[in-house]
Amino acid sequence: MATIPIMTSTSTLAQVSSWISHTSLSALMQQSEWTIPSIQTVHILSIAAATSTAFLVDLRLLGIVAQNRPTYVIARRLRCWGRAALVLLALSGSLLVVAEPGRSLTNVVFGVKLLVLAAALLSNWALERGLCTDPRYWEHRPTRAMGRVIAVMSMLLWAGVVLAGRLIAYIGA
Amino acid sequence: MDVQAICAGLQQSSLATSIRENTVLFPGIESLHVLAVSFLVGSVAIVDLRLLGVRSFTLSIRELMAAILPLTWLAFAAAVVTGTLLFLSNALEYSQNAAFRWKLLILILAGLNAALFHSFTCRGLNRWGRALRTPLSVRAAGIVSLLCWVGIVALGRAIGFTSAL
Image (cartoon, rainbow over all chains, first blue to last red):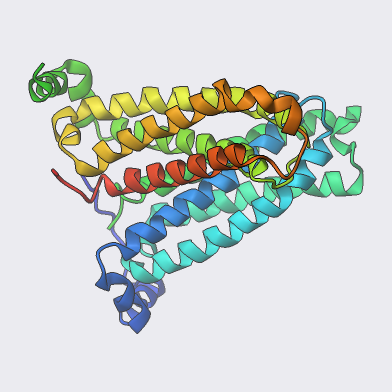
């Protein structure tokens, strides 16, 4: 596995990373060999939940799945799960940063991942806002095309989050 | 049948070599594998939770399975294709990896559980298909499935950490 070193300045991020690595929580997490892989597994499962709920709403909006149920019903039923998944993602992700701050904070790919994640969350939010205003918001002619574009973008962005997450291990300091 | 020799041979193939030695190909295929498994596990979980009585976007189990399982199969196919490509690239090492072997075993277990459920348990679908309090056999299938897939994800993660048995 080739790791490509990337130049990072001794910036604030590097200093924060160094500070975190000296906390007791960070040391605690690095003690046992299985702590980090376990939290990573939780992280992967939450990504599975987050992407699946997002994909299903997107696919329904595109008319590909569950056509006999209105989009807003699918979205409403999956909403709680999607939000719980995001909370778990944030928690497990934060713990992973604390455990190995150098692996993420000083890695440009991690920053890219967060940006793509923000964009993915924004697209989810946009779709949700529409559905909250009017259950058939994305079915009216003016908004239909836009809804489809956002749905496709959402799926690509979530795929991008997974890709960036995997690439952290291959690129960076 | 010498498994080791076969794996060593597979690893020498030009396909395996190009995946292994290409800095972009392996991470790319791996990411697609994670994405496929993510959707596979997520979609299966929705069905499993419904079997356990957790309301989903449709009350009817038959309807839910009809809506979701085709997608699950697609994700599974993608996971198998990407997984096979990944395996080929380091066939010998993976075949000797404890976590990988257990992962395959639990995958087979998940498959058996699903086959049993769809072939036998589902014969009573008309009776309990719209119920939230499902029969024990149905809930057992749901729990076993969930546990298997969580295990598969965990073992998949562990592959990088473990070596030979």
